[in-house]
Length: 322
Image (cartoon, rainbow, N blue to C red; front, side):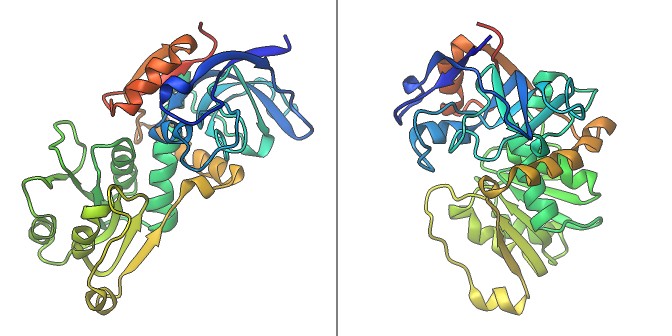
């Protein structure tokens, strides 16, 4: 078989610009692996890429996350079940919303045996982002108190699990009360003042670490919620790109502000993170998101659900199904 089916777009716009096409099946070059994709997640970032954010080269197959089986590679990888998130997928190289994807072997990571392909495909973007923010950039430590804004979102939920795995206490915050939040305490920022509530919950000491998955209007309240030597990691900004904060408080409290952009990670760096996440899923400390599956022919409908903000489940494409 020299062809495959893939989701494609040749112009920027809403999900309606997408279509399922028959294109040439990729051929693994020296040092590469060919993966038969069993399941691939649709992330909000995929919708943004299709709309033209980050200006992907066209035509392009979108999709950052995947789980599947290596069908062509060296003996080290042939036949292995793998999961991951590809560097540049959907931007400058074709992504995972296709029946096959080719990528360098050193980008591969073996998936946990206790997860299904669909479950493994939900992990990539949310958990890689949360790990990059909390562990790599934030240097989270056991016994610390962590504030996670946007705690009801996919990254926020992943971050709560990772923080607990690392033995930290978690204060979750979002605009809506999350009934199933795993945070130790949850603050509804629509009805409560974030810095005031955090002060009350920390004996006026403030938190050690903030993962701000909202930015914009939440940025300064999150900064005010930090204590001495606090670190705040920013990964996005909803609404306004410009923010302000009290610079004197910032330096008097010896605080640090750190930016994280997982789109800049290399494939090798992503594989290292996926390998670090594996024991958490194998032990049950980390758990995949609820999911909803779609055949490839329903890709536009699946993208529309993600574009509409449906976060009730992770939307997963089955590329091998029509």
